[in-house]
Length: 426
Image 1 (spheres, rainbow, N blue to C red):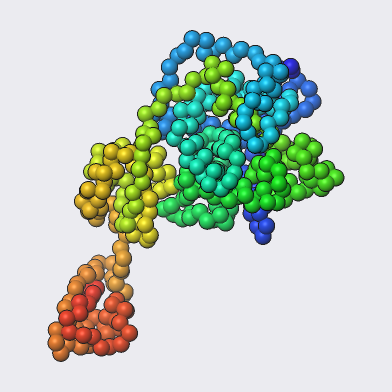
Image 2 (image 1 turned 90 degrees about the vertical axis):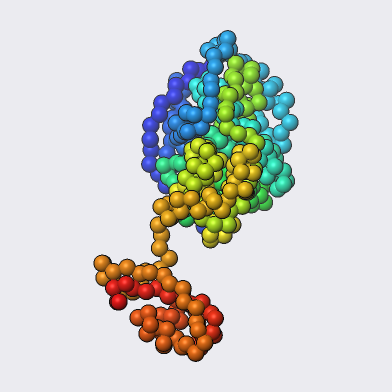
């Protein structure tokens, strides 16, 4: 085998998005180079390196893992082509896992050059793979597609590419919304492992209807259907991945080989003296539904939970706020803390509320910078009219109707009216 050198550099480029027809959800712009002694070059998407770096620097790695030395750990025993072929052939997969020189180079990226990162991903496997497999199975998809998340994000739900692709499945914003993921200032469901996985399943099903070939589905996930279609045309209509390989964007050519390599590495890690990193992340968790706005600080302090653990279990909440006041929201907690939260939810919601939630729901009109608005509740007495009430508090009938959503000037005795009184008027 030729000796392989890994040289990293950054390129700029463009991102294809999903338009009238499904076109792309991927970031294919930036690349790094896997170069041999010959003239051929293979370009690895830079997002692959960024995802590994992001995982390495994550809170999970820094605080929830424990590596230990093992005998023979540094020994990278050479593996022959025949052994690689035999091992791949023994995996019970629906998706074809062929072997060639390109696949070998990608396998060595995982089990030789980035072997320590494979150990971290093995530590996360029990946290994410059962959920991903359940979603794939529910959609009738091959379970081995779970290994695509290894290539995409290194199983890091907060991974963010330079082009803005985010989450476990690296959705671009427009494509995420196209597949029903909510993305706003407070919430980014691309970072919700469960919802993003179901969105990815929908994409896989759409692409399989289009191509009927899993390698082309995987390629389209990286560069978009438009680029795959162009490669098919340039290959004279051939629809085999390896036939269109030379015509794909160079950043995409390694995408299927990387998938095959990740599948190999996650199954045969022990044969390469790799050991799953021990993790203290709680595997046993439960979900509770939140129907009011709650801040992570409230939960962390009242239940004595590390706030970074809350962030790790609920990465979709970008600013530590669960906006359950707009619609019911799911929150994931360690199982033991789930029961405590249910018992103390009201107390938690009230704790430091005025300090943590400063958004005003009303600001009175025509107020000077020195005046302030006070909310008052007035119970209508028999014989009182809106005009009389307005005169008492120094507000107009129109204001009373707007604040209380009244359709006319009539108001029944006993009704409670909300009034915003400008202290500057008195």
